[in-house]
Image (cartoon, rainbow, N blue to C red; front, side, top):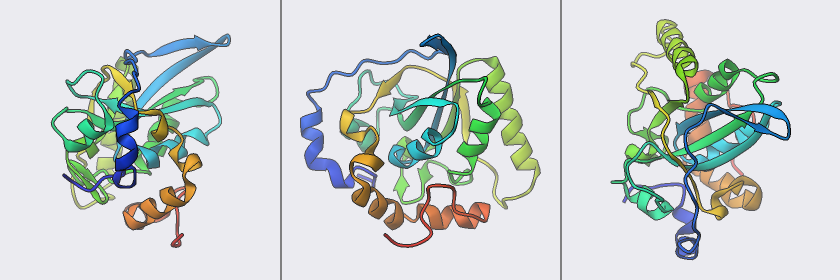
Length: 218
């Protein structure tokens, strides 16, 4: 088993098996409280760390952590962490496209991942930690491919960008104890993030620690 962001929560995962969480079908948009919303889905390693960058953005109405991109229906955290389900730890972002653009979400995504390491992010290794953009319609696909191409052509990195761009499929929300983990367990979250070397690597890649990251040990 690879190291993963659930290292601290193994004992709690047994309790979570009783939760029945349905899949959310890939969708480009919906209406919430009279506001037309859209959906974006990203994978960037440990989903605990991918939730905060998006939820602090004006125009984002919800961020849910979960699993997508695989073949196993209703997977549990342990199953995904072990590998073999095909799923990646992911975040599904609901946003108001009038207030924030998909291009902005892409920019935030890129600056919070390592786009040049295949099948891993920071201390977590395996296909379940791959970086990926799951597009919900052709417009998102075009924008995602354009942003990847632009980043590649910038020659910022000496290695090629390996982040996948694939069609969105069923998204399975993770167990409740994983949702808003950074708020529910701030000390454990900060220790994991620091120990995993996420922000050190992001600073190497992008020249700065992203908003909400940690430049010092907790």
